[in-house]
Image 1: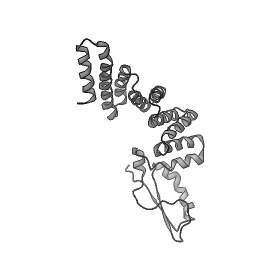
Image 2: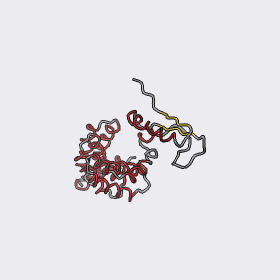
Image 3: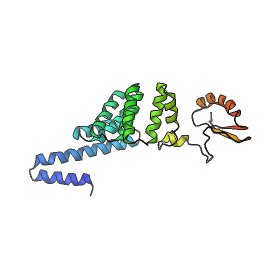
Image 4: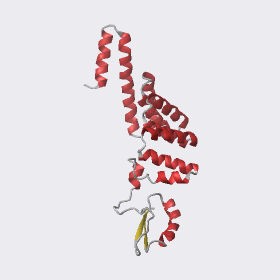
Length: 228
């Protein structure tokens, strides 16, 4: 039997015995869980606007539960309703202070809202909880680049291929060749430059093939094929 069924059975038992005050918290849990599951079903299908009212109904039933706040924040973030998202994320963090991923989402939303200094502070809080998380380090690196902190920014950007999100997976080169880190190479050596970004970025970076040609005998560029 699930926790939801257990709570519902316990609530009905208390109510049938005339103990309505004891039944009420259990009923709130049951309703909150039902609303949350309905919201999650819409969320999983990318229906963020449809999911949001369910998450907020769950919050109304059980305000101390952090997950509906967090998921409502993600929905608002996806809808670019940044102020609402930040409010939900802050509630989630307050209710679950050790949740590094919730702090990470708050930091990303602050960044997207242009609050760069506040975002940096929250990234540091998230990394204090999960210091080796590549997605948080990479996202913090993007923030450093936005701020013009080039050394920290490029260091974080190098972690972009280690994350588990869709973008990280799509950008990984389909090769087992070793990565060049700037070390000296044998005479006659070659290098393959993998285009992991869009066509515009690739065109902008083609110019550096000439710089690589000064170090390597052969320079090849692997680009995406786009059908018009």
